[in-house]
Image (cartoon, rainbow, N blue to C red):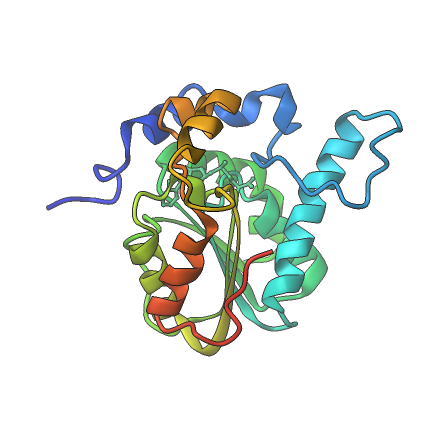
Amino acid sequence: MVTDETAMRPAVRETYGPADLSGAPIFAGGFINFGYWQAIDLDGALGQVERVRSQEDLYRHVLDAVGLEEKGKLLEVGCGLGMGCALALREYGPATVTGLDIHPEQLRRARGAQADLLRSEPGRLRFVQGAAERMTLADGRFDAVISVEAAQHFPDLGAFAAEAARVLRPGGRVAVASFFTVDDAPGRPAELAELLETFASGLDIARPVTALTDAFTAAGLSQDVRAE
Ligand SMILES: C[S@@+](CC[C@H](N)C(=O)[O-])C[C@H]1O[C@@H](n2cnc3c(N)ncnc32)[C@H](O)[C@@H]1O
């Protein structure tokens, strides 16, 4: 039998394994996203405080977009160390938050980083292993699905979209923040590979943003599919 772990691409296994990308200073101690800098004065001093704020703001932007309501059930796909799951729990009052990640090391780190919340909010937060393309979760369980700076790693956006649609209740919503090319001009992947080592190494996969919106439309999430 093929398990989710054996389906992991080698670049993902290595990056989020013993190398522990989250330990890099650029990620400010736990988030592994580049953040949303809209509300931050880029002419002022930029340090750890601003970086963490940008990372939290990215999650707030995505959670606002998905319309997570109090008492809702949230799933994050590619949750990393669970920093966004914790923020959602603290600030949005959902009934439950589930963080799913393909990498067992990341889940171990998440359970450590969020040990206090796991203890103080029993049953409201949990971390499960699974691939975006094959989630180990029941049908129709969630009101909202988010994914933050993880979909650039997913090899099959169609399978991810189909799985997101499957685990959402009817009328549920999904919001994704990730790296895409602005169009499907043939030179775009090479341009990105020049700019970012993670595209050059194959860790990140360059695709046009329409690959994601088309995948969601094909999965039946047809109301108001849009890219920002
Ligand atoms: C850049 S980190 C982002 C973590 C978190 N969302 C954040 O913003 O702090 C990407 C995460 O996606 C996970 N991941 C990569 N490929 C995946 C897949 N196919 N299915 C589920 N998770 C995956 C990695 O293990 C890693 O924890």
